[in-house]
Amino acid sequence: MLGMGAAGCAAAIAATEAGASVILLEKMPEGREGGNTRISGGIWFNSLDRDGMATYLRSLCGPYTLPEEIVQVWADETYKNTEWLEGLGVTPGVHADYKPEYPEMPGAEFYGGYLGVNGEMGQQLLWKALSAAVRDKGVEVLLDTPANELVTDADGAVVGVAATSGGQPLRVGARRGVVLATGGFENNPEMVRDYLRLPDSPVWGSPAGTGDGIRMAQQVGADLWHMDNMATAFGFRAEGFESGFYVSFVFARGFVFTGMDGRRVMDEFPRGGHGHGKFNGAYELYPAAPMHVIFDERTRLAGPISPPPELLPVGWNMLVEGYEWSEDNSAEIERGWIKRADSPRELAALLDVDGEVLEETVRRYNAACAAGVDDQFQRHPATLAPIDQPPYYAFTSAPLLGWTNGGPRRNERSQVLDALGRVIPRLYAAGCVSSTYSWCKDGGFHIADALAFGRISGRGAAAEPLA
Ligand SMILES: Cc1cc2nc3c(=O)[nH]c(=O)nc-3n(C[C@H](O)[C@H](O)[C@H](O)COP(=O)(O)OP(=O)(O)OC[C@H]3O[C@@H](n4cnc5c(N)ncnc54)[C@H](O)[C@@H]3O)c2cc1C
Image 1 (cartoon, rainbow, N blue to C red):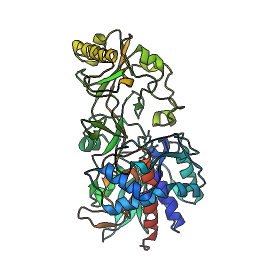
Image 2: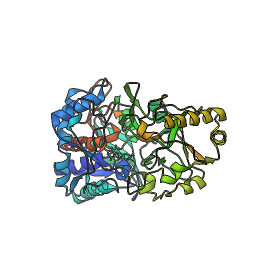
Image 3: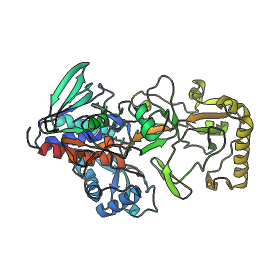
Image 4: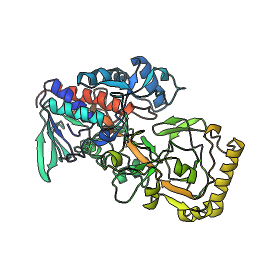
């Protein structure tokens, strides 16, 4: 198994239970292993009905259809996640009352909201449970051991891995198979530019997701899928931190998004979620472009613009680096992460934006607030709060890249396929290195997918005949 996130842990546990002897190679050293799973919300969705969720997945994929076998297996296997976790000693519970993000889509009524360990979100709870189970099952875990290349035999079957352990070369033979569970490519700037068209996006999660598994799969001839799908959010990069900071205005609504020219660009509360928003009647990737975020003193004083651990205990900087965001955002302003000026015009100068344009943007938005009608973008009246109390503030969102979805194409048995659709013998993939999702996705979909296809990969690899 390569990678110790949800997919790698599920694969390792399933393979061990199927009788295989498992070695798990993990790139990062102790305290930094576990990928995005470690710092995630640890939420998996509650499936109320297999066929219903299959319908919902088909709806979410829209025109970017999946093979029907994959839809069925996804629905069947994600339905089993809760029971499987219980079998590991986890106590699942409902985390708040989350509704589907795409309620108008067929099948949405079978989405039963968020489940978490003890009904809680984040705090590394799910990852700790999974990694403890991996150790309990007797899996040999090699930390600080990035896999670099796959080793194949004369027939092209994958029979091992070339890695680096503690800085030294290491070759590990795989007598039954190799599972790629190395996460996404969000930390690989070249791949992010090539496939996602984001020029300079910081990441919300682990720095380890550099697309290694995708490169290894390509090395042995894998086809790729879903490379242009992702989940982004608002946030920014800050000097001295490998990962970026997430921003969401949960305490106040006096803010707008502008383009690089200082003009307001959208309804700041679009429908959708997890990387998509509905604009002009259709879903599109969102936020998918750099934007300036403008707010005022009232919004600054209302509370941290990066949600505190009591509300959202997730993210690399919060959970691994231990960064504590100040309650009134003053520390982040002092650090220069958030720009401050006495007027919109002066703020514009700091953003390299035309002063008159930004002044007009704020004036027009405030007029909409006063009228209770956003004639520009039809933002819901209940969310209209003016930006009129100086000083004024801004940061530029790149945007923040949550995670990527694309990687080696695989079949419903999690076997990696080559460009002609043939199985690459003894190679499996699961989780964000090769996620199921081709377009929209709801909350808890990614952990659910990683667990489901992680188990399928582990069982499949364990069932291969000995090489
Ligand atoms: C802030 C945040 C919150 C999220 N919350 C949720 C949520 O609540 N619910 C949900 O469904 N999804 C959530 N997601 C998405 C979800 O976390 C991921 O999609 C999921 O954890 C991916 O699991 P994975 O096992 O595929 O990859 P990861 O968890 O990223 O694990 C990959 C592992 O592979 C290792 N690795 C990388 N390269 C190599 C190599 N060359 N050799 C060996 N090891 C390697 C990494 O170090 C890492 O341990 C969230 C994401 C973020 C960033």
